[in-house]
Amino acid sequence: MLGETVETKMKVRKAVFPAAGLGTRFLPATKAQPKEMLSLVDKPLIQYGVEESIHSGMTNIIIVTGRGKSAIEDHFDVSFELEHLLEKSGKRELLAAVRNISDMIDVSYVRQKEALGLGHAVLRAKELVGDEPFAVVLADDVIDSEIPCLRQLLDVHDFYGASVVALMEVEPSRISAYGVVAADPIAHNGTGDRLYRIHNLVEKPKQGEAPSNLAIIGRYILTPEIFQSIESITPGTNGELQLTDALKHLLRSRPIYGLKFEGTRHDAGDKLGFLKATVEFALQRHDLGGPFREYLKTLSL
Ligand code: UTP
Image 1 (tube, rainbow, N blue to C red):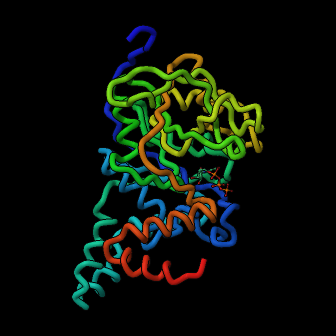
Image 2: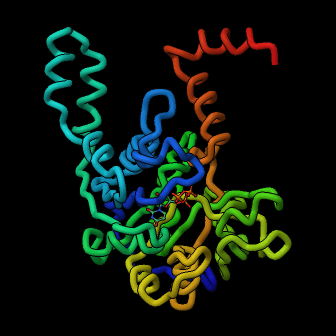
Image 3: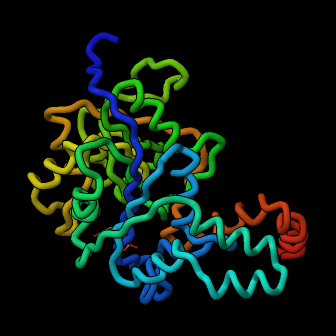
C-alpha cells in the first residue's frame, strides 16, 4: 500500500496492565483497593481484561501496581485454603472457577510508587517487556465484543508491524475527557472504513478544540520505541507523564494506526458506566439473566 510503512514484525506476547491510578472517581470504594478489583457481577474488572488478553493470544501479563497491590496479587495467586474448603464441600464448579484464575497465565508485577501518570506507569514495565512489541490494557475499560478488542488491534499490528490504538467516536460534550486523534481513514482488508493512519494526538482537548471526535480508549499495541518516547517527554495535563504525549513523540519517527474497534466499551472506572455494565453483564448471564430481567420489570421506572 503506497505511503504505508511496513515495519519488522514480531509476535506480541506480553500485556501490560497499569493498575496504580488513584481511582478518585470511584471513592470511597477505591480508598483501600484498586478500582481494577471492583467486581462486575462476580469477576473483578482486571480479570475481564486478563481473559481478553488470553483469548487474544497473550502469554504474559505484567501488572503495574500501586496501593492495595496485595488484593490483585492474591487474586491471581493459588488459594490453598479456599481450594481445600471447596474440594471438601464438593463445590466443584466454584473450585474450577477459583483454579482457573491461578492457572490462567504467567503474571508478573512491578510497582509504581507514585501515580505520576499513565505514561509513567507503562515505563515502569520497560525491563519486563524488553525489546519487543506489547499490549497495554486499561482494565477499567471493559469491552464486550465478539472478537476480543485486543485481537482486532493485533490483526492490524500483524500486518503493519506498527503501534495501533483502539478508537471510539465520542460526543463533543464528552471529548475533553479523552486523548483525541487527528487521523485519515485508510483502506485495509476486513476493517471496512474503520482503520486510520494517525497524524496528531491531543490529550484532553478543550471542547471545540478537539481535532476530531475519535477518542483513544484503553487498548494499545505498542512498539518498544515507546519507552524512549516516554523518557523524552515532560509532564503534561494534570502534571502527569501522559501516554498520549509519548505517542505524539513516537509519531515523529514511526507510523501509528488507529482502529475503530467492533464492540461495546463500558467505562467501568466511572460510577454510572459501572452500573450500566453491571446491568448489561448480569442480563447476559445464563444463570442470572432470566430472574434479573423479571426483577427489573417489577421496578416502576
Ligand atoms: P485514569 O485516567 O482512569 O485515572 O487512569 P485513575 O487515577 O485511575 O482514576 P480517576 O480518574 O482518578 O478516577 C487510566 C489507567 O491508568 C492507570 C489506572 O490505574 C487506569 O488503569 N494509571 C493511571 C496508573 O497505573 N498510574 C498512574 O499514575 C495513572
